[in-house]
Length: 426
Image (tube, rainbow, N blue to C red; front, top):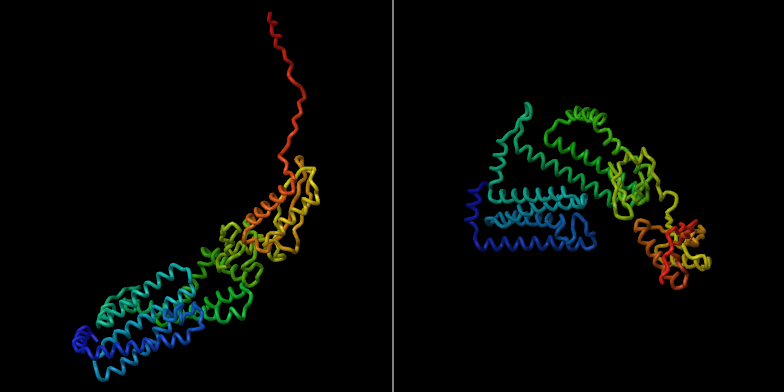
């Protein structure tokens, strides 16, 4: 239908028929909402089908589109259809927007690029709906088909490029949806280890994206045999300029498969100590206790020395030292130190805190207190500070002195006074 036909139908619309269409549309939307409400009661909030509020998922506009189109076909036999026709185009656009938005937000929850793609798809969908409603979509597509671009000896129209891009995007998003569903529904239950789940998820996603890309290229009309040349060129590039990048990617999969280090382990790499928060295909994120985060290339974790502090023992030792006067009771000081550490909820009871008389320092008796925690990622300096504050309070309450630094100055000789004696006064 072109623009003139749309204008003609707009003039044929009667008030009674308009209200009938509005009533049918309201009934279709209500039925779609009821079905989504009934089946979405126990669904998770991140569900692609139902969303957080039932109506912001993919199922609601899809059902509304189905019921509205059935109503439109039923009404077409005895009156001119306008409202339901507009509603069908709106719901088609809404289905496309919801599909891309929900899948991308589920797969890439914090990606700015994903948000940009969502906005682009939204604009294209609404523009396409408006053009289809007013009957200008076919003329616009025909004009795009007339505009061609030359690629060597091949000429491709803008319409072909546009439709190919949409087809490729649709296939790739479907592949991402399948991989996210497999990861959430199957891998989370079948694979308990987080690292193995990560490598399986990455492998499935890469495989599905590759298959989706091949299908998309085939749908557009690209000869897949030409990809052999591209594969050879890519191999040469990996052998020369991209060998470091390829080594990091391969090392990432090796780390995940060998499980020598896993997500959650505390490691020390090149003097930087922290907990592994994520293992990407190219790099690993290590977060220190003070919040600083280091990006370590995966190749470094394979070729250099890495201390896995969590591999043998999950308990971490924290020490603090202090000096008390020589007249202090050693047993009492040790008891105060151990009690101050044991009073902190993060300090482990097994092994229990223990205090040692370490040195006979020049200023007094030097003690060291050792205690262990299982959660060093929550901070060690803050816990050491809390223990020190408790120790200071108990020592003051017990009257035990923390001596100031003392220094003995010995004078070997004094200078001789050669000045004349003062004259006697008369």
